[in-house]
Length: 455
Ligand code: FAD
Image 1 (cartoon, rainbow, N blue to C red):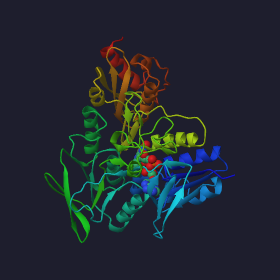
Image 2 (cartoon, rainbow, N blue to C red):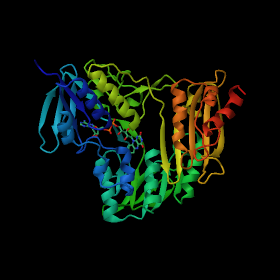
Image 3 (tube, rainbow, N blue to C red):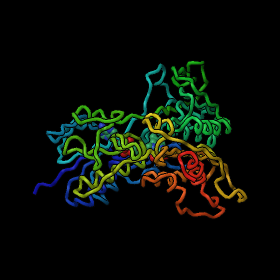
Image 4 (cartoon, rainbow, N blue to C red):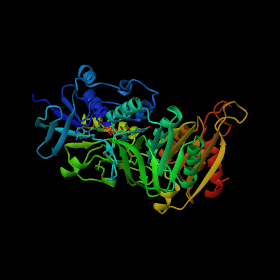
């Protein structure tokens, strides 16, 4: 009997989650993974903490090596192999072995595209100078860390105030004790937050001594002896020994697009609830693939490790002949900047307005624990709810230790389609070291009820 041959492009969160699920259901199939970098199953999310020096060595970020996949699960992984073309109808891919330069084709019965996303790099002058890093793979994290060890930079400029920018600014300012400037051309940091909550995050960034320059676009870099020496902006020049680019990511979907597969929002690969694409022999999962927004019901793309792992699991079960589906996601995300935690889920006011929804919102300031209990920290919660129906639409949190993870209550309520009233009625746990008798999320809910209709 001819063995089924299943190929996977990309050997990180989505690709290797899928590979494991396929193996469970298909003990005899050939499962072969092609991965461009030198690592499999690494935690890209841990890169800021490795660059900071909080985690070492870098191998601690690797969950499973290619050898372990081979020995424990009989999954064949070829690292430093780049897939350069897909022929879905012919059931073939073209592979370029990066170390030997050899080019060959491999054939498949089923194919998973799990190529992730790549950092956006603007075409500005001087961007090729040493000391400028866009963090995407573990290898780029290792290079950034080596640069710090070799050159001991004193002033870092972080371009882009999103999650990665915030985490890298933390690594430099709070852990490495470097002078940090955070630059963003938009008038606020963290664009997935509403301006009022983003302002709290901006204040938190400034309060630890980081210089925050908002509304100021990057125009280029100058270098000395090949190493970056300053960042040029619309308003002037900022001296820099090291630069991190955190300008967001784009899905790696060009292989799929060139192969004729349908694309969706932001050029992510169109995928259904089982992660199947527009071709019956091809699946897509992770940062390269689309899903649905659970609140808006619209096609949605988000690059998050949580989502990539779930998509990979569903793709693997589907490809293995099982039954699984991912209804959608909420864009639930969190980050930390020194002592401040931030989190969001569902729709912001900005997104609700874009969808033409009639909504109200509440913002409350409270404490992470009972006010009298040691370690109680300030915390802000914002909730957005639909007028008339009382449906909960989203939430955002900024606060001290223990604040961010509360976003999961809001995410669970959103996934269950709850109203603000349902959220207020939830039987959540309480003791002074953890909360007040009313959880902060429910206090925000009670405030919101006054606007959306309720007691
Ligand atoms: P990737 O992890 O990007 O893996 C795709 C793989 O495919 C790559 O290894 C790439 O080398 C390979 N590949 C691409 N093209 C080809 C090709 N043509 N041939 C062969 N191989 C190819 N998410 C969170 O939820 N929380 C966090 O705190 C968080 N922090 C992050 C911090 C940083 C610095 C970064 C960079 C990301 C962070 N993320 C976080 C996002 C998270 O890491 C990604 O969403 C997740 O890794 C996506 O998994 P993936 O498998 O879809 O893609």
